[in-house]
Amino acid sequence: MTPELRRKIQQRSGGRCEAEIKVRLQWQRCAAPATEIHHLLTKGRGGRNLDRVGETYHLIHLCSECHRASVGSLAYEGGMLIDGSVTWDRLIDRPIYSGQDQYLLEKYGTTSGS
Image 1 (cartoon, rainbow, N blue to C red):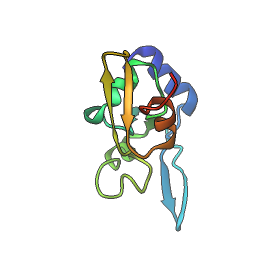
Image 2 (tube, one colour):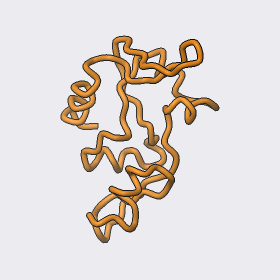
Image 3 (cartoon, rainbow, N blue to C red):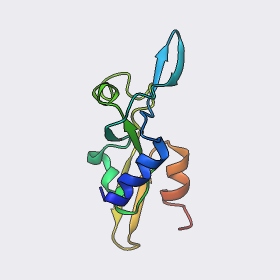
């Protein structure tokens, strides 16, 4: 991840954890001091390909406690993981997303106009 991409995430978060946590049956932002950047679309499923083009949608600034909780069976429900995968298409020199996330489909799906 480039320093510029890291700066964009830190500016967006205001230095506070962006995780949504459940408090008394309601979801709210954690807002503890953020120290780590988490890939909602994991690096192993192509998150690095999105990093490569400067995309920030799949990245979230977290406190260490929320980052430790970002794996496991509740990760999708808690908004800590995005389904699908991204590959790099060498012919058109851009990432291609396949999955259910509407934003990623529109921007990087096989039918996107970019």
